[in-house]
Amino acid sequence: MAEPAQLLLVDSLTRAARQPCGLPLFAGRSSDGLFASNAAAKKAARFCQDQGLLQRIGERPKGKTTQEIWALSDKGFAWLMEQTNPKPVLEALVAAVHTSQERVEALLAAVHENKVQLLTLRGQTEKALQVLRADGPHATPAPHFTWGRHASLPGKQEGVRLQSTIAESCATAILSQLDKWQDTGMLEDCPLPELFRTARPSGAELSIGRFHDALRRLHEERQLYLHPWTGPLYELPEPALALLVGHEVAYYASLRSEKN
Image 1: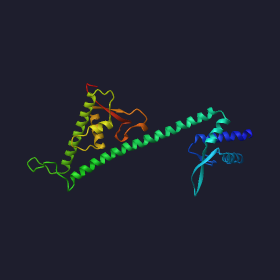
Image 2: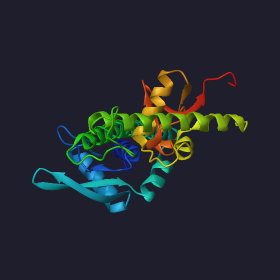
Image 3: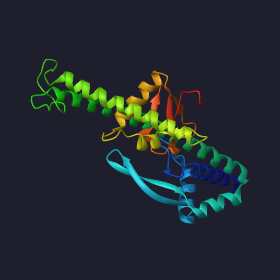
Image 4: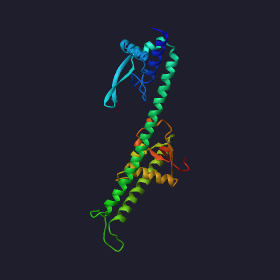
């Protein structure tokens, strides 16, 4: 094969190696492709198809029609390694891997941030609904409600008082569990999923929203530390229980005390 044609094949197959998800066979005016649309490139593309250097992996819509997507085959990769210095090809592949990893990490970070926001909104909505239920026509009075000089009508005030009691119990349970964690001699800080499972107030249902609210309050009152997750976000276990604090994702907690 003549040298210009050889260079054309190497260039096009290297481009295919960088795009494992495939590209159209020919580039358009505003779209990428493995080959240009001139006569020499079309001849080279036909050679790659006939020799099995490229494989058709699917198609995608293009206006009212569809467009075939082609990718490098195993035979094409072996041919490319034989015809050229493998170092530039491998460098291109490594660069493509890094680019793809950065995109994935950015997407995972965006998904996690949106999930944290969703959970926060869900918790706030849950609290609002509980207050509304307590203030509604069928609201249930607090346990042991009796009429008397100091009694008040059941309603919004009673609902708020009940929520305050649950929040206080949750905060107390969190501090108690962190104290136990510290007393066991654990060197690492307590992960929030572990804290959530063990800090459930006796007889109370602990939602993630209430748990996060209690953590924020205790953090603002300087009763505990919240420590960030420092690894890649895609490795975060149980991300729903992580807490967004400022620009950091908090995943561990510890007591603010002389024991620290």
